[in-house]
Length: 154
Ligand SMILES: [Zn+2]
Image 1 (tube, rainbow, N blue to C red):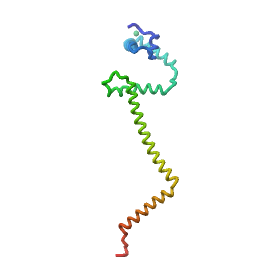
Image 2: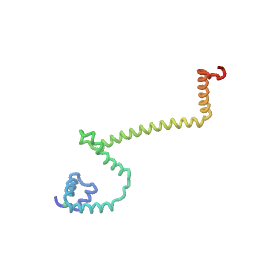
Image 3: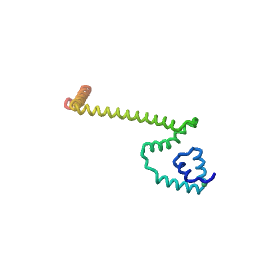
Image 4: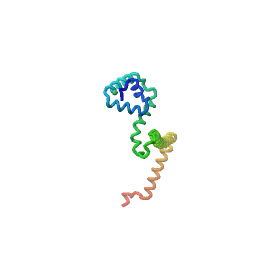
């Protein structure tokens, strides 16, 4: 393979070439210090001209997909031709489902707490009297079951 010039490295760096071509270029890059030098200067040139990412969500998603692929590929070795994005999408669906479940659970708990606080706020005397009534009732019941011995009776 002959040396690769900057006109080829630029589209390679930007991922605009066919996968086969990119693999060939990569292979050559690993073995040719001259082309590595050209390549590095192209990278430098491009990175200084690169605009800052406009959409950070897209950038984050693409990074997350790259991170998730190795973990996802482990349990589905029997389907190597299935695109990774499908599995990633499936996993994401599970995560969304789990997150939604947790979110709903917590909202339910908080709603119950807020409801009780609200009840107490609107009817604090009722609640207090209810608690004190119960206390008195229980004390009376206890006294009826086990009346205190009069220390002077014996
Ligand atoms: Zn070369």
